[in-house]
Amino acid sequence: MEDSGSASPPDNGRIVHFLKRQAALMELAGLNAFRVRAFDNAARMLEESEVDIAEMSGAGTLTGIDGIGKGVAAFIEEYIDRGTTGAYEALTEEVPETLLDLLRIPGLGQKKVKALYETLGISTLGELEAACRNGRLRELPGFGERSQENLLRAIEGLGRYRGRYRYDQAMADARGLLQALQAHPRTIRSSLAGSLRRRREVVKDIDIVLSTDAPGEVGALFAGRPGVEVIARGERKVSVRLESGLQADLRLVDDARFPSLLHHFTGSRDHNVAMRSRALARGMHLNEYGLFHGREGDGDPVPCEDEADLFRALGLGYVPPELREGLGEVEAAAAGELPRLLKAGDVRGLLHVHTRASDGADTLEEMVDGARRRGHEYVAICDHSKSAGYVYGMTAADVEVQHREIDALQAERPDICILKGIESEVREDGSLDYDDDFLERFDLVVAAVHDPMGMDEAELTRRVVRAVEQPATSVLAHPSGRILLERDGFPFDMEEVLAAAAAHGVALELNAHPARLDLDWRWLRRARQLGAPIAVNTDAHRIADLDNLDLGIGIARKGWLTAADVINARSVDDLRSWARRRD
Image (cartoon, rainbow, N blue to C red; front, side):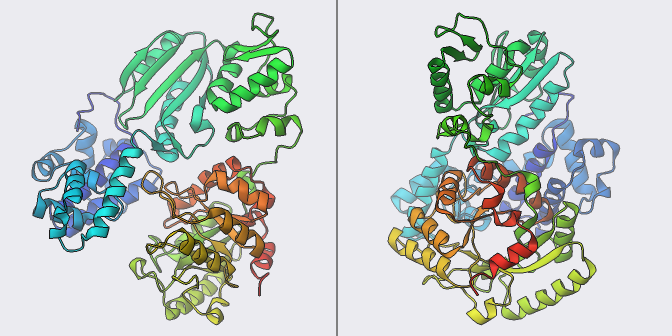
């Protein structure tokens, strides 16, 4: 770890990340399980809190947070002061930091990574890849030929995803940059641009467009941020690399040119080509410097106060940034056929929420109250079903206990409707893992495939379609099964699954977890065309996860969805009627 070398303390994200690294190294080193849990719990508590960790550390009040003891508080204080800690440095002498890279591989938990290191001396991705190829892993129990093949695919995937970042991770960096720039007195207007503004689920960099009459001063602030490496610095563009590895580009412009520059660098390339073509067809010329009369760009500029003026000058309705992918949005705007996209205020309830009854971190009461505080009209509790033993799936007896708890809590919380749901495992033959009579006890049944079981495309497609056809199925959870930057979706015919969902009135989940954002926005648009309903679900396993709804809404908008396409934009009575439509 590098010394911070700056009076500016690390932000919450960096502190939490460092705590997680410490906990992982402690477990790999075989240290006391209670001490490991102390760091794990502290990271979780701080990640969910809205406090300024550095400020509380400086005031000596961190131990006032539940789960933060004196030892962890002292560790955090040292990290804030030095950018590392003596305890962390001592651990890295005992356990290589590179083992943390191995933990990024799906299916490799801490016990397996520890076994690889202690038995075979494997401490890097390269060493693991070599061991898979030469068959050395066969020396360890649980690492057969198929396991080695899976590991090789996972390692290849990590290489393929190198240099790419999830939307939520990039936004965490981008917000801090934008807030600092907006606070500068010489900033006039500023905005994110590029793929982040278009709500792409995975991005390569951060683009910021800013108008100012003092580009040198604002650029100096950007280049002088703590922990950044300056890649290039000019009067109108500054590029830096952040500690996360992300590149951030700041483009500085006079305010009159802000709308056209923002539009240009929001992109995408195909959208910009379509816009330039429309300008030429109307006897104008469009580029990053503005919209001009005449086809060569040397005519008089067309005054545009903002992007809406730019679109209006070209005879178009305003195209929301999420839609600017060159997929017919310009033509739809010209014809007045752009959809009225889903908004946060349209979503009336939360579906697919977990509690401690299975693998959630918080109680039923805590999750319901979290939904109430966020103004939701209803919440569906959907813990895992009995076949999911690896996440404490619920037996029939467990379900009966939970239903009594829901009834009791409902009587105490009349201002929110608590729906009885379940995330039911899809068996190999496509059936659900409770019988039909038992499934009738639920208001909502979310069917989920978590293990493709080595099936080929045709077999897995049949399995998923049969799950959709089950009379009790209300929603198909995280349909493709993808994990962003870790694994691609399961191998099945998505077109056939979408058609089955439309035919049977089953909703496809848009899982708002930042590592999933599944169903992919490209398929969302197809689902809408086929008439398949969508459920924008948080799949929340802790209270803080409820706030992932905004990520899901962004992807829903990118998929051209309206409130009419989304089942949890309905009233609770309409939702219940819809869920019972197949009884």
